[in-house]
Amino acid sequence: MQLSPHKRENVLPLPVVLISTVSKTGTRNAAPWGNITPILRPLDEVVLASWLRRDTLDNIRETGEFVVNVPPAAMVEEVMVCARNYPPEVDEFEEAGLTPRPSVVVAPPGIEGSVAWMECRLVEEITREKYALVIGKVVYLEVNDRYATGEGNMDFGAARPLCMVCGNDGIRFTYPVDAGRFALYSEMFVRKP
Image: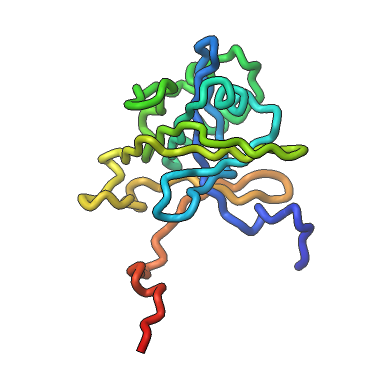
């Protein structure tokens, strides 16, 4: 079956995060995001794509700070509340019943109950005609002890980090499952004879 090229999210699972920001007037904002990725391991930056008209983007531009909250699948309803198109003066933490978690380095709060929190500072914005790419430096990263192994790895079975796959009529929420294969990074390198 051939699909239109713009339907690539129908076949490419995306992580779902909640980006928390605070406006210059102090209003808390929490917005779901699927278009986000780390920039090359072992660097400490992330990039997110945004439509040009988003309260979250305005807040990042004005304050230079944001928090990437990784919600567990159990928070899917809160994520959907945050997906609504509220006016900028609405506190989305209150609307979704989210509990703020004080950040360590940046002003915007994280979201209690998340799998992990990445406190970020704006490094660069690349603006195109219809969208912007926001590059943020992770200045503080913490994993919820409930969802981490002793070595600092994510316990996927406990965490069930929220993901999504788009469809023609809506979004199917899911979470990753261990495929039963562990690979050391060293397996990626061809050994010279």
